[in-house]
Length: 144
Image (tube, rainbow, N blue to C red; front, side):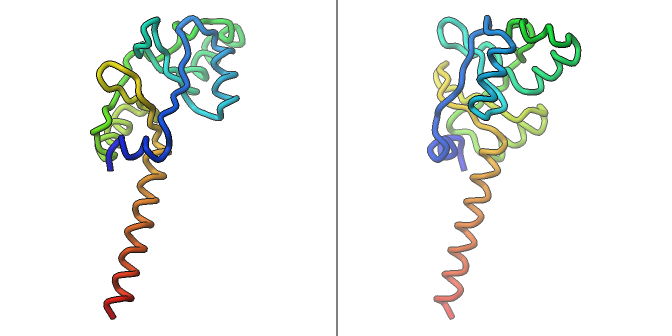
């Protein structure tokens, strides 16, 4: 299974924010969309970071409520691992496990084209397993 097939089923919508957005504004976006991360993009739409619930918790823990008025630029993860449409789910799971993160932006030709979460990968793997199990059951019952 590839990143392209995961995006085909889940959709390619990506919630993005600018580096100047405040932590409070991003909290509102994450809560409103019921998501765990947003991609931070620069003026040309390029990926400059990712801000996750973990980044926000760390900021509030170290700076207290005052962190809510900080800009995302101050707390975002800058060293962003990305993937491509042709990457496999296995490679993606390895990347996420090794890096200890749950969201990976999908970039093709320098353009942001989607985002994959560990939940997206698990959901597709379960669906694929169910399809394979059903096909096997059908084969066994028709062969007998």
